[in-house]
Image (cartoon, rainbow, N blue to C red):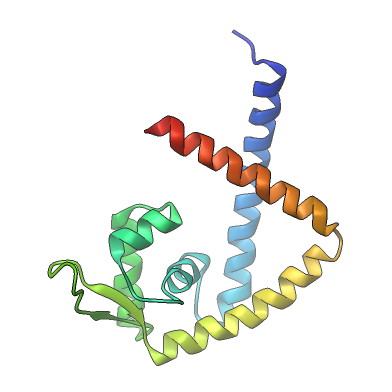
Length: 148
């Protein structure tokens, strides 16, 4: 069986996204190293930057496993970057919230990421970046729909 032209193009895109993902994780680790963070820790802190969330919601929003997020939350808690709060909607599922130190580090990495992103984006047209985002979002939506 062989790919259609569209299937081959999609496969090429998937392989390139895998390569890009690896580079982004490496860059995230590099960007956060001086703050004692990693890409994984940054992801979790970023997920609760606007509001406290329970672990299952963080996992769903980030496309990660609940167990992986719980492990990361436990590490972040031991480092004083997050704390648990009572959840008014579910007694057994605590909310994970940033501590003052967690908020301080998330803000610092936000500044670092902004400088980094501006430097990378300067070499690309805004319209091209927005088009790539639309394609990736559409593909994610298609995959999510077909999984149901």
